[in-house]
Length: 294
Image (tube, rainbow, N blue to C red):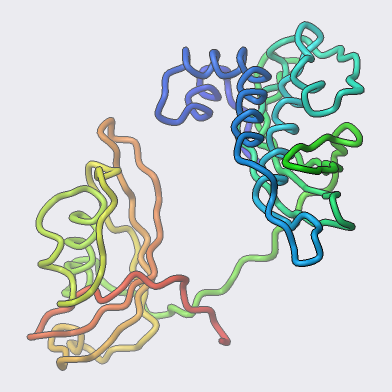
């Protein structure tokens, strides 16, 4: 859940890279865009079939349900036609325009209890106008019941708000040894992230030969600064400065990534470094940090 935000800040976050004018256009055109997306889905043809002839679960029902939830959350007393595109029975809405805006949606789960029917849970990031005039962002999960045949779908009811999946407790990473950012390991990581995220310098100078580490393009940030480094392995004093070729070290890195305006975004990287010719090189970006006790 996001904290309270004022209107301007909320729209900046909602549109990410776009301007506020585009955000308002998306809000006003929400039901229209949902219907247009439905046409795209329907033109994709009938859903794949199982051997027994029943429609197989696919991305199409989930995407259809996602647009239905977006249209339902966007609908107002002045414009509820988008809901009827998905739920022909329709409903009389009382919400004033602009008081509830879905910013983003994603499918949480999808099940098919029987042939030709689906139950899809969609999570939405929603801005809701508060009594103090501010918009508060929160997550809402809604279950969509729907049926389908020959590439067409229809909701059997309005979306049903349900509990969102819970969040587990914090995971204890298996990186206990602090590393000096100014030391040899820190210098290699700093050079790698500057080249990888900010396009500063040659990436291959910091990467093991044969490692496949293509950087994001275009570079998403203007500068990177290390804030914390920890290793899984324990080094004796001075050992990191004189590594034996082939020695591997697993590292958890936290850095601040700065955009062109000087705003920073914290990022984490789990990295494997391998020593070669007396220096540390990034061998890979690990799929996940090592976990304690595993």
